[in-house]
Length: 311
Ligand SMILES: [Zn+2]
Image 1: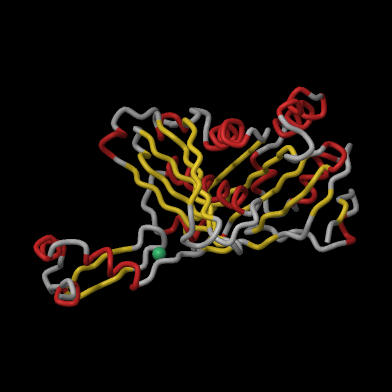
Image 2: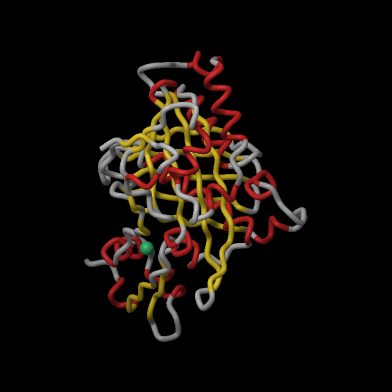
């Protein structure tokens, strides 16, 4: 069902305060997009990662970016956003699974963080590198990957570059993330974002030359981080604030949840590829090899003798 957004939002069910993606379109302009916000999901995903705050911020943004991009494709598998750079934030992965599941992790290399500015920007953290978007249409099926250089300005700008170069699809993306503190729960992360994109069959490259496109770009530039993050502000109210001069239509919001796909049957074959001598070194004093899923923090423990390759 498609509803038109008006200044009177009492008539229909609004998107929830957080952990959703809300698809919308601006039919008269040949544009479509989505608004998304994560709170419990991003807090859960980040809770197992002991990263410095600037790295957490980028990981939170990446979770949201995965959800924006993945939910826009009719896929049964997953979409992954991957960052690889020569900075201290050397590697980051976030996954969106069909049905709204999200997870992610990042590696931070303290040794490379020596001469960081007090408030490091994206370029200081990631360095020079690449952003890869990998789409697996069906679970475990053939994967398609697009690769673009990282943009020092951030993940959103890097992802715009991906659409520009890999898809020739004019795209605007804004992301904002911020730490939240709740009594008894400690620190969490909230992250919000919006993507606006040309409808492919209607308009190609030339749309970026139109006044409408420039106007939408200008509107998005006025968007404050709090508008993306404040859970007391509905996504529909934000859309109305931005686009009330045009007709804005929304589809029902899609809920997002934390999801990890790890299990014992996936971990075991990986460990079994190691020679027993190495596994013995990995084992704790009690003869048990313990590994931890980097995405969700689940610990797996195997007795050494259960890891010997079946003859
Ligand atoms: Zn896991």
